[in-house]
Image 1 (spheres, rainbow, N blue to C red):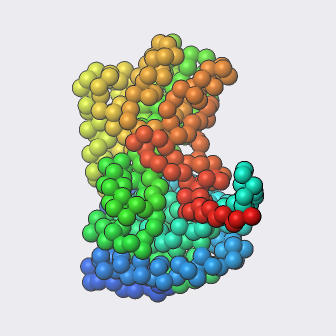
Image 2 (cartoon, helix red, strand yellow; image 1 turned 120 degrees about the vertical axis):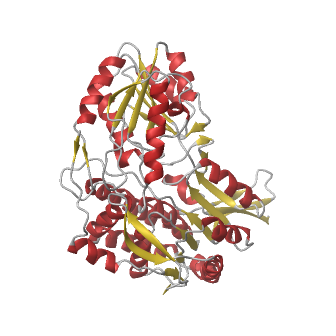
Length: 494
């Protein structure tokens, strides 16, 4: 592994881009300065503040909901084709501004520019997909079985929505929630993560340029998430809550949402198993492992967490994956050749250190990496750990960083038991050449998604979501727009 020297000063291009990013609250189509208190957004590669932005108060949150509620009827009555064309213009504008969005994400989140460009592509697909779905909202019409009347089943927008997005995919998580809401005819209040709010503010400006009417989208970055969110969720005008984040926070939000019986979508924590059988194509398995583990610096809910490898191929798999990991280049995401950027903050670095130290103390071995290099920023070396023992924290907790931990199994039943031995169930990965075994694993591994002989499953056209403590509801695909629609049945007597 190579560590690239990190540039600590912003370039002229970076400074110019940051100057164009709005620094206010976006409420009712107006950019507001907000209170005197500001949020300092850091570049995680240096730890330095790169921009200060408005910090919403609870009162600002309610004003944002006021704006969304005021715009709700007008937007719901807007023709689906008009909503679709606005979303399509947003997609086109994003393609025109993709270099700006990619650089901005690298600056505030840390991912390498190549990956940030990939997120622009991925995030943009939600705009394109749901622009197409907006005009396909349909219902049913037909005679009831008794012949006594006609049944009409129609779909209606649920109403104002509160969307809480995470820091790790600043653009894609915003488009994955905003696009279906707008396509369905809902207005929204968006609370971006405090650590990475700049991309969402920049995207709100793009939506305004695309023709989204005032009040349909409102953005309120804040450093006091609970104080701002609680009154919004308690307000009877709110009808939908969508959250992506940790399971403990999700449980709290679900309890709050229950008071007003809100529609909810919860994409929560993961602890993804990555199972490699003895008959797997090891080249594909290693390639899949690199994607599933080190994409986004390992900071993804879909990241492979527990590598469960058949004992007959475990040593060879570990050898091959270690070679790949040692070839990664660690550094600021804007620097040439960098393939692994920084973690999001110092707490993330401390978490990686603690997980590796606990595994080693229980008998694991570190084949490469395992430490945080000295210097500025929040870096942790890409790491491979083998001989991980049952009970290790690294098997129970979501890692959320560039640490690949390998344990072994001998039978298929053992592999299934290990894969399902967690309260989470977001995604799993299985590598085998045996089609019958692959089908059995689809049926037996208890997750909402699976990659069979691939390490990348996310797609705007597919339903994204999990089971058990990984959440409820789906984002993307045909299912995604229905999270923002309510079903109404009407009987017309014959």
